[in-house]
Length: 123
Image: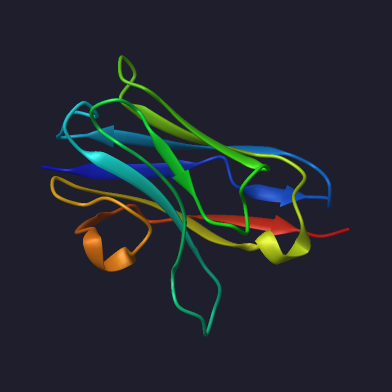
């Protein structure tokens, strides 16, 4: 059974940093790509970053490129999102997602989702 559990969200001031974690089970990070998405009320879910299963190649949306870094620890079955230089517009619920055939930043390419973790950037 595929499961994803996000953690690490919270309240941070503009310019600050947070590291989100996505603990996974029921599949291998060596075979499934994983992506981070975020969503604010009334808006569509936005793809933030993704990492390939085979070689760990990463992709980022233009809105976070240069500020966010996605990584994975296959031994711990965990994926991370290091978020630096946070802005108020980064405020959202952040989700991790996976799929055996998914790749990229479209939410329609992923069938398995975590429950989300709230990130609030405010002074």
